[in-house]
Image 1 (cartoon, rainbow, N blue to C red):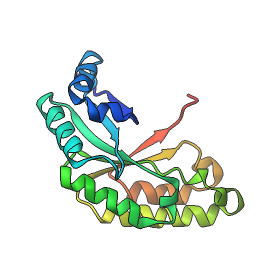
Image 2 (cartoon, rainbow, N blue to C red):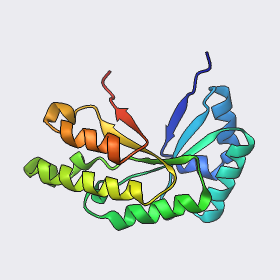
Image 3 (tube, one colour):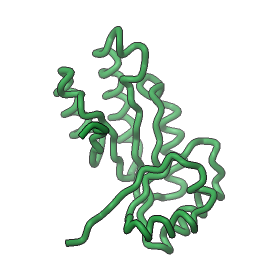
Length: 164
Protein backbone atom coordinates (compact mmCIF):
# COMPACT_ATOMS: atom_id res chain seq x y z
CA UNK A 1 0.00 0.00 0.00
CA UNK A 2 1.38 3.41 -0.98
CA UNK A 3 1.57 5.93 1.84
CA UNK A 4 1.28 9.65 1.31
CA UNK A 5 3.17 11.69 3.85
CA UNK A 6 2.86 15.43 4.26
CA UNK A 7 4.92 17.95 6.16
CA UNK A 8 3.87 21.35 7.52
CA UNK A 9 6.68 23.89 7.15
CA UNK A 10 6.69 27.40 8.59
CA UNK A 11 10.37 27.97 7.84
CA UNK A 12 11.60 30.46 5.26
CA UNK A 13 14.67 28.26 4.78
CA UNK A 14 12.59 25.84 2.73
CA UNK A 15 11.73 28.58 0.25
CA UNK A 16 15.30 29.84 0.13
CA UNK A 17 16.85 26.39 -0.39
CA UNK A 18 14.31 24.36 -2.36
CA UNK A 19 16.81 21.75 -3.55
CA UNK A 20 17.83 20.91 0.02
CA UNK A 21 14.17 20.85 1.02
CA UNK A 22 13.34 18.33 -1.69
CA UNK A 23 16.32 16.16 -0.68
CA UNK A 24 15.04 16.17 2.90
CA UNK A 25 11.52 15.26 1.78
CA UNK A 26 12.87 12.43 -0.36
CA UNK A 27 14.85 10.97 2.56
CA UNK A 28 11.72 10.99 4.70
CA UNK A 29 9.54 9.62 1.90
CA UNK A 30 7.39 12.75 2.18
CA UNK A 31 5.26 13.33 -0.91
CA UNK A 32 3.62 16.63 -0.02
CA UNK A 33 4.76 19.84 1.65
CA UNK A 34 2.46 22.46 3.13
CA UNK A 35 4.79 25.46 2.87
CA UNK A 36 3.97 28.66 4.73
CA UNK A 37 4.07 31.79 2.60
CA UNK A 38 3.57 35.49 3.29
CA UNK A 39 3.08 38.59 1.19
CA UNK A 40 6.74 39.38 1.74
CA UNK A 41 7.94 36.26 -0.10
CA UNK A 42 9.38 37.10 -3.49
CA UNK A 43 7.68 35.87 -6.61
CA UNK A 44 10.97 34.40 -7.79
CA UNK A 45 11.42 32.31 -4.63
CA UNK A 46 7.85 30.99 -4.88
CA UNK A 47 8.29 30.22 -8.58
CA UNK A 48 11.61 28.46 -7.94
CA UNK A 49 10.17 26.44 -5.06
CA UNK A 50 7.28 25.19 -7.21
CA UNK A 51 9.60 24.34 -10.12
CA UNK A 52 12.06 22.39 -7.98
CA UNK A 53 9.20 20.54 -6.25
CA UNK A 54 7.63 19.59 -9.58
CA UNK A 55 10.97 18.26 -10.80
CA UNK A 56 11.25 16.21 -7.58
CA UNK A 57 7.65 14.99 -8.05
CA UNK A 58 6.49 16.56 -4.78
CA UNK A 59 3.15 18.22 -4.26
CA UNK A 60 3.16 21.76 -2.87
CA UNK A 61 0.36 23.43 -0.98
CA UNK A 62 0.85 26.99 0.14
CA UNK A 63 0.11 27.32 3.85
CA UNK A 64 -1.33 30.62 5.02
CA UNK A 65 -3.18 31.94 8.00
CA UNK A 66 -3.70 34.68 10.53
CA UNK A 67 -6.36 34.93 13.26
CA UNK A 68 -7.32 38.42 12.05
CA UNK A 69 -8.63 36.86 8.84
CA UNK A 70 -11.60 35.76 10.93
CA UNK A 71 -12.95 39.30 10.47
CA UNK A 72 -10.76 40.63 7.62
CA UNK A 73 -11.27 38.81 4.33
CA UNK A 74 -9.14 41.01 2.03
CA UNK A 75 -5.71 39.85 3.29
CA UNK A 76 -6.74 36.22 2.78
CA UNK A 77 -8.01 36.96 -0.73
CA UNK A 78 -4.68 38.64 -1.51
CA UNK A 79 -2.82 35.54 -0.37
CA UNK A 80 -5.09 33.35 -2.48
CA UNK A 81 -4.29 35.54 -5.46
CA UNK A 82 -0.55 35.10 -4.83
CA UNK A 83 -1.05 31.34 -4.66
CA UNK A 84 -3.09 31.27 -7.87
CA UNK A 85 -0.29 33.11 -9.66
CA UNK A 86 2.16 30.31 -8.81
CA UNK A 87 -0.22 27.36 -9.16
CA UNK A 88 0.60 25.05 -6.25
CA UNK A 89 -1.45 21.88 -5.85
CA UNK A 90 -3.65 23.85 -3.48
CA UNK A 91 -3.74 25.97 -0.35
CA UNK A 92 -3.95 25.23 3.34
CA UNK A 93 -5.76 27.87 5.38
CA UNK A 94 -4.91 27.92 9.10
CA UNK A 95 -6.66 30.92 10.67
CA UNK A 96 -7.09 29.80 14.32
CA UNK A 97 -9.89 32.23 15.32
CA UNK A 98 -9.92 30.88 18.87
CA UNK A 99 -6.65 32.79 19.48
CA UNK A 100 -8.49 36.12 19.26
CA UNK A 101 -9.37 37.90 22.50
CA UNK A 102 -12.93 38.23 21.20
CA UNK A 103 -13.27 34.45 21.25
CA UNK A 104 -13.15 34.53 25.05
CA UNK A 105 -15.98 37.07 25.32
CA UNK A 106 -18.15 36.22 22.31
CA UNK A 107 -17.18 32.91 20.72
CA UNK A 108 -20.39 32.66 18.69
CA UNK A 109 -19.76 36.00 16.96
CA UNK A 110 -16.20 34.94 16.16
CA UNK A 111 -17.30 31.56 14.79
CA UNK A 112 -20.04 33.15 12.68
CA UNK A 113 -17.53 35.58 11.14
CA UNK A 114 -15.00 32.78 10.62
CA UNK A 115 -17.49 30.53 8.83
CA UNK A 116 -18.70 33.39 6.64
CA UNK A 117 -15.19 34.41 5.58
CA UNK A 118 -14.00 30.86 4.98
CA UNK A 119 -17.00 30.22 2.71
CA UNK A 120 -16.21 33.40 0.75
CA UNK A 121 -12.53 32.47 0.47
CA UNK A 122 -13.43 28.99 -0.79
CA UNK A 123 -15.73 30.43 -3.43
CA UNK A 124 -12.99 32.85 -4.55
CA UNK A 125 -10.57 30.19 -5.82
CA UNK A 126 -10.32 27.23 -8.13
CA UNK A 127 -7.39 25.84 -6.12
CA UNK A 128 -7.92 22.89 -3.80
CA UNK A 129 -8.55 24.22 -0.28
CA UNK A 130 -7.60 22.38 2.89
CA UNK A 131 -8.94 24.11 5.99
CA UNK A 132 -7.29 23.56 9.37
CA UNK A 133 -9.70 23.11 12.26
CA UNK A 134 -8.93 22.22 15.86
CA UNK A 135 -10.25 19.00 17.35
CA UNK A 136 -12.42 20.85 19.89
CA UNK A 137 -14.98 22.84 17.85
CA UNK A 138 -17.69 20.21 18.26
CA UNK A 139 -16.80 19.80 21.94
CA UNK A 140 -17.45 23.54 22.38
CA UNK A 141 -20.92 23.31 20.85
CA UNK A 142 -19.92 24.39 17.33
CA UNK A 143 -21.05 21.25 15.52
CA UNK A 144 -23.24 23.19 13.09
CA UNK A 145 -20.40 25.58 12.26
CA UNK A 146 -17.98 22.68 11.85
CA UNK A 147 -20.38 20.98 9.45
CA UNK A 148 -20.63 24.20 7.42
CA UNK A 149 -16.85 24.54 7.27
CA UNK A 150 -16.49 20.94 6.06
CA UNK A 151 -19.33 21.10 3.53
CA UNK A 152 -19.09 24.67 2.23
CA UNK A 153 -15.63 26.08 2.95
CA UNK A 154 -13.11 23.42 1.95
CA UNK A 155 -12.29 20.45 -0.21
CA UNK A 156 -10.71 18.78 2.82
CA UNK A 157 -10.01 19.55 6.45
CA UNK A 158 -6.93 18.95 8.54
CA UNK A 159 -7.94 18.30 12.12
CA UNK A 160 -5.26 19.76 14.36
CA UNK A 161 -4.76 17.70 17.49
CA UNK A 162 -1.40 17.92 19.21
CA UNK A 163 -2.54 15.81 22.17
CA UNK A 164 -3.41 12.46 20.56
